[in-house]
Amino acid sequence: MEAVNYELEIFNNRCMPSAMTVQCFAHLDQDIGEALPYLNAVLGGIDYVKDPPSVTFKVQGKLMTVHGQKIAINALKHRNEAVKIVDWVLREISDAWEKRDEIEPRYVGIGKPMIIEILKLLPKTNCRECGAATCMVFDTQVAEGAKDASNCPPMQPDFSEKLTAYMEPFGLNN
Image 1 (cartoon, helix red, strand yellow):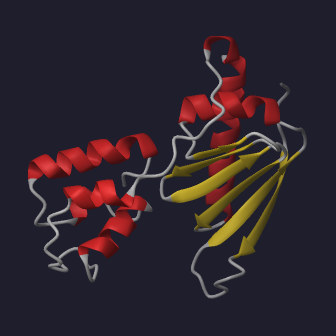
Image 2: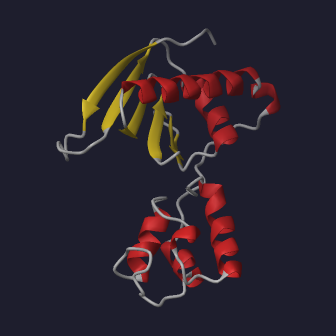
Image 3: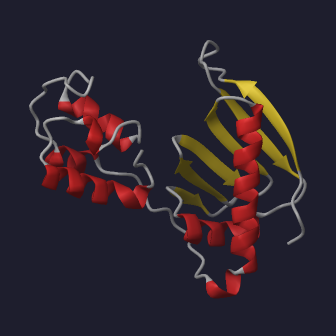
């Protein structure tokens, strides 16, 4: 695979025009679809689609989807951050492609955390110390990667460790 160049398109969130973040599309100059199963194996995508190929990741609080000829990223502060992340993703794609003989391609995502499994580990006090109205609301925020075990003051250390371990494969720990 040759070096991939791209054209960056930055735009505001259409559903929330007053949002303080921007989104981007990096339009690629070549189709990298063949590399996506290897990238998925290396980075552990949340979701993988075979046809047309795409893989979705949550990295540093940002949701990104890599398609054959486009990378989409949300929750960006500015253009420079978009460039930095796109360049990182392209390096990861290149590395995965170069090492493809050593990597077992992965054609499925790791899935998403199950809310019921997270809830089992919470103290269920609805104390609001985490800033959420209920433990169920906090649970959902954890499942989305917005909060983690450290945000629940009454959580016992052993449950905190279990929650952190449960969330780790999903790449959603803060």
